[in-house]
Structures are given as structure tokens and as C-alpha cells.
Image (tube, rainbow, N blue to C red; front, side, top):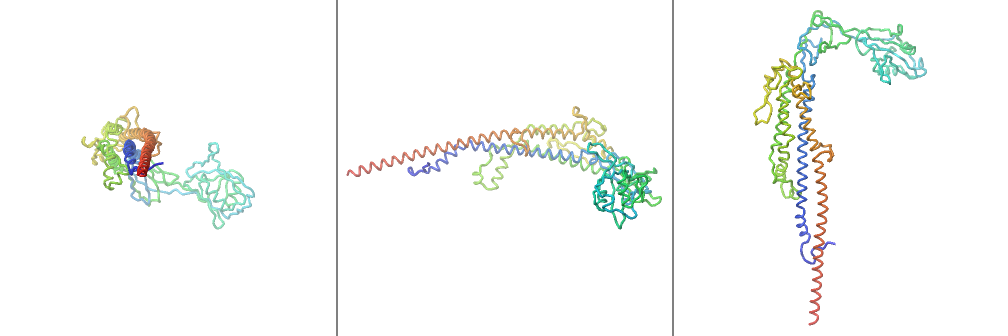
Amino acid sequence: MRIGGLASGMDIDSLVADLMKAEKIPLNKLTQKKQVMEWQRDDYRRMNTMLSDLDSFIFNEMTLQKDFLKKKVSSSDSNIVTATAGPSAGNIKTSVEVKQLATSTNWISGASTYTPSFPFSADTEIELKITNGDGTGSKVKNPDGTETDVIKLTIKAGATLDEVLKQLSNKRELGITAFAEAGKVSITKNDTGSASSIMLQDNDAKLLFESFGLTHTAGVLDKTTTGADAKAIINGLEVTRASNTFSLNDITYTLHQKSPVGVTSKVAVSGDTDNMVDKIVKFVDKYNEMIEEIDDKISEKRYRNYQPLSDEEKESMSEKQVEMWEERSKSGLIRNDSILSGTLTKLRTALYTPFNGTGVNENYKQLSQIGISSLNWQAKGKLTIDEDKLRAAIEDDPNAVYALFNATGSKTDTESQGLLKRVRETINGTVESIEKKAGKPTSVNNSYMLGRMLDNMDSQIDRFQDRLIQVEDRYWKQFTAMEKAIQQSNQQSMYLMNQFGGGM
């Protein structure tokens, strides 16, 4: 039982609270130290997020040839022909005269005699073979992983004509579209070309297609309209293809309609210099932002007199004062960090070491030769771009510029690696090191160094809080004993006074 000054008249609650404030000083320091460590962990993780963002940008925007070495293609008449070009396409001009468009093969019946009860009074499996418009055979995979050119379907007993035609259309390997209208059945091959055919492999298949009103010769379905191959004259050379879209030397042409007699369309392929310049400029901007943010963090001033505020301290301050205080409390928590300062050095080395790998052009083996150079020493390794010089280098040899940035190279020979590969390896190494120290949002505390320290600090805090409870109980016992002693003394005094007063 706690007696709060009834006998002594003292404010015991306040006395104990004041005594406990002194006892809690070490606990407050532990709590502040924990808060600082959590802020430090969060600073490291922000650095990792920024590094990972740069790594993702490099991978998504600059690693693949198709994205980095884009080509521009123009057509003098896009109603006749259009084209796209891959990164290995040459910068060429072609004249195209479309002589004939590719078309699909059709099979159209006379009158359908199909009824659900004939010839399918029971579930019936049919077998077909398909030749595509380009002459290739369509294949399906067997359950054991092998392939076969025999395509099987089971027609359910009682299935309607529309249901069977829908089943044929949905069988991807057949590559056909089938429907019925006005008592007739129409089947169209989905692809184009002259070689399309449907081969009926068993009697049930023949019965089915005969019931559609279609005929066959030696098991091959008779065509109503034979598909045609596309024909075009490209730079004087006749080209025949099963499809209206085809590729030559990494240029993909799409034919849209037949050319007027004797009229050619001009298709020109050139390097998309703007795309390449834009991606490199964005990389340099993001790289500079990263360098600036890392340097700001590792050179940030530490204000050791500004420790984290307790809830009681915050209550006595305005929001602006708390904000300004915490700004200084959080400053310099990763000042002079060896991981990050080492990363800046490695990144500078990665970018400034000349490239001597596959695809090297001696005129474009380092950044300065393509118009990218380092600012003065005060800029901490940030880059600047001469866009005119960069554009000239890309127009002269885009593949060499691509190799400078992206050559695979060997891990044991840094100079054989493209600059961005070196940068990504440096970033990935840093991210891994920081994760070992500060983890990531999904990490459990015991998997990284600061987390283990935080767990240990939580244990210390718990033990100290248990001790404070014991100390507070001791104070209360002492004051309670004092109150009881005073109360007993008062009682004795009253007794004596009563005795003396009673004898007069």
C-alpha cells in the first residue's frame, strides 16, 4: 500500500516522480540512441533506394539494343508500305513496289447436311493435319513433351453445328476461323499464303467435313479460294513471302495495298540519334543527382547536442521548433560512411577507365571522346555533356557508342566491360553491403547489423524498465515507512499530551 503524505504533509507523488526523473536519465539516453540508430538505418535504406532506381533505369532504358539503338524509318507512302527496323539494320534507302498482297485460303460449303445425331451419336475423336500458308506444318505437344503434327479433337454427341464450328475455331493449332450462315459453312485460314491446307486423317474427320457440305480429294479439303503469297519488288529484286509482314536484314516491311503500276514507295532507315542522346542525357542527370545526394549525406554536419526529443519535450515546443530540432538531430548520421565514400570512388573509376573490349572504336573508348567529361573537383565527380559532340559520335558510329556503355566483357578484365556494366556492378555491390548493415524494409532485425544492435538495445531498455519499476517500488516503500513512522510518532505525542493534560 502506498501512503501519499497523509502524516508528513509532503507531496510524495511529486517527490517520487522527481527522483525517478533522475533514475530515468540512462533510459532516456538509451531511447535516444535507439532513435538515432533507426534514423541512421532509414538513411542507409534511402541511399539504397536511390542506387536501385539508377540501376533499374540503366537496365530498362540503356541495356537492350532494341531500346538504346533504335532506328527511325520513314515511308513516302504509308498507305502502300510501312516498315520498322531493328538495331542491327543498316542506314539504307529502299524502293518498294507492291505487286500483290498475301491473302488467306477459304473453304466455303454448298448446303450443310450437319445434324447433331449424325454422324455423332456418340462422342467422336477426329484427327486433322494443318499446313500453314508458308508451308510449315502445325504441331501440338504430347503429354510426354514430344511433338506431333496430328491434331485431335473430340466432338461431343449431340453438339450443334455452331458448337462444333466454335470448337474448331478455338483450337489454336488449327489456326482457322469457322462459322455458319444461311445454311452454309465458311472456314478461313487465319494466316496468309498459298500453301495452306487441311488434311482429314480419318473417316470420322471426313464424315464431319462432308456433313458441313465440303468436299475433299484424297483426304485433302478442297479449297474454294487458294491463298496468295505477297510479292514486292524491293530495289529491283522480286521478293515473295507468305505474309504481308516480313523481314529483310532486320528491317520489317508491312505491305498494305498494291502499288499503282510502275510507282514505287521510298522507305528510308536511319539511326535514331535523338533517342540515344536523350537516354544518355537522362542517365547523366540521374547519375549527377545520385552523386550529389550521396556526397551531401556523407559530408553532412553532425549536431551532437541535438539529441532526439522525448514526448514531454515535444509538448513544450511548437511544431516549427520540433521540426527544426529534428532536422538537426537527423543530420550527419552517415557522415564519412566508408561504404558510400568508397562507392563514389569506384563509380569515378568505372566511368573514367578507358574501354578496350569487343566493339571498341579507338576514337570512342572513353567518355571524354563522346562529349561527356567530369566537372571540377568541387563537383565531386559529377558529369557534364557537350551534346553536339555526343550527337556527332552517335551519328558517326552508334554501335561503338553502344559498346562503350554496354559491352559484356569479363569480370576479370574491367577494361573489357562497358561503362554501364561497371557502374551496375558497383551499385549492386554497394546495395548488398548496405543491406548487410541496414537491411531493407522486408528484413527481420536479426538478419542485418543495425537490426541486431536494435534488438540488443530493446533488451537493454526492457531490463532497465524492469529495474526502474523496482527502484520506484523501493522509493515508495521508503516513503511509506517514513509516513508510518511519523504517524506512529504523532500518535505517541498525542498520547503523552493526553496523559499530561489528564493529570492537571
